[in-house]
Amino acid sequence: MAIDTITNITDRTVSGPVTWDVLREDLLQIPKETLVDMVSMWINNYWANQNYWVSFVERDFGQEQAERLDAEVFKKTARIQAKALKALLGLGDDMKTMAFVLKHITTQWTPAGFDWVLDEVTDEHVVFHVNSCPMSKYRLGNDLEVFSCKVIASPLYDTMVKAVNPRMRAICTHAHPDEKVDGLMCAWEIVYE
Image 1 (cartoon, rainbow, N blue to C red):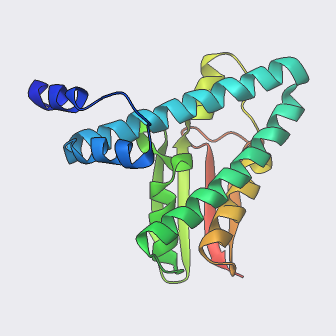
Image 2: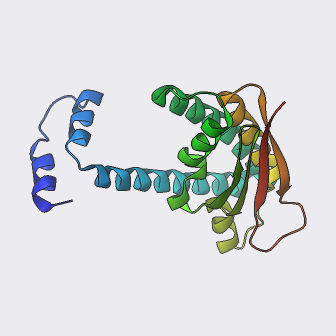
Image 3: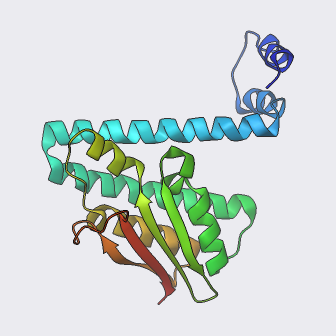
């Protein structure tokens, strides 16, 4: 972003109520490329916050409670994000929509530390795998045991896919505590029931 653009934006800041209309007008003055970088910054902050709160819960109440609460939070937020994105963009309820939603909600945001691959997207299913994720990177980097993706991620993905289409379901084909596979954290298939 050019210095004069930043100055113009900050010069517009005056005393008064801070409403969504005021914030929206500020955002509309920022170049698209910079807005994309800001979204990435906000999502990285989301993941930092998520990693901190769950590690504090674990410290005070133990790993089992941290995993349980993490699963509850992600189940709620994934559903909300999937429904909101679908409504905002007027998306359908097919497998291509499901793949798009996976790519564009914070639970899968690549710049936040997700290294993942859409292995297959067809009319009948979506197959993907995660090589690494922010939570596991954080936990491994702090000598903590990796959480069980089967406990945390299974309800998250199933709730998220049902927000796109209630006839869909997520199947975990590999996740911790399954036997470790180098370079693979978890693998999933989304199918119609």
